[in-house]
Length: 222
Ligand code: B1M
Image 1 (tube, protein in one colour):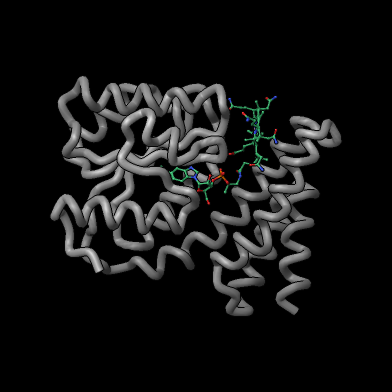
Image 2: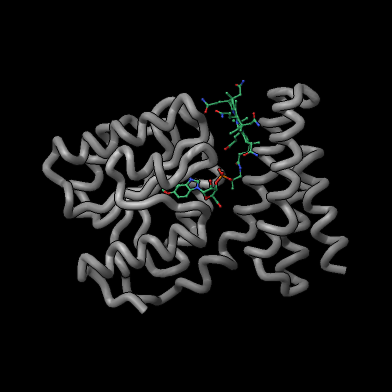
């Protein structure tokens, strides 16, 4: 039965149908399907199909846009369930998060933010297409502990290096930690640009954030 639900979720993303995606998310909640299973085993495989077909020239930009809208509808319907886990926890630290300048991909970044916040971090999401300086200025304003920078394009990932340099210019390093992630990003890229770590996915990013702030002696990390 769960397999059938996951199959329909995948199809709703391929069809670019936000209403159906939202409906299936609500169905998952009613059936007690863990929200992260719905995302990872249901909806995300659909987005991967769309990405592959787009690359192969079998789907076009409007399909990508609709698939993105459907994915957003699915995850925002599940978000309250994910957040419940983090309610009433002591803050593990302040995180400023965003997608680099020139890049409007938001789904992965938002998922990372949701997971961090569900695990007890205070997340300030600057959104997408975020100017380099904004990361540093917001971190200063909030006295943030960690900055998370997402990039989905090989052409925009250099923006992550610019953010590391901006933090240095503003005298925020090494106190403020920086993690990077996104489909084209790797550990060796993170090392090359002097980031503190690379988050392969939302789960790994939570573990990474906890371990970086623990080393900092910042928070009562479990
Ligand atoms: Co775009 N797009 N897109 N797109 N898009 C990709 C990324 C692409 C791989 C598709 C393809 O060709 N196969 C390709 C990039 C090629 C490259 O550079 N190597 C691409 C392209 C080319 C483009 C355009 C240039 C297309 C065009 O206009 N001709 C254009 C660029 C626009 C811009 O940003 N300036 C574009 C536009 C779009 C839409 C706006 C239509 C839409 C995004 C909608 C939205 O976000 N609201 C879109 C989509 C949906 C995709 C795909 C299909 C899916 C991306 C996604 O959301 N994945 C994508 C192909 C693919 O990835 N299969 C593609 C799901 C998400 C959960 O995964 O974002 O990887 P991801 O996040 C993961 C991890 O990477 C990690 O954790 C997340 C959760 O596990 N992670 C972090 C992410 N950020 C992190 C930050 C961290 C830590 C971990 O720390 C801070």
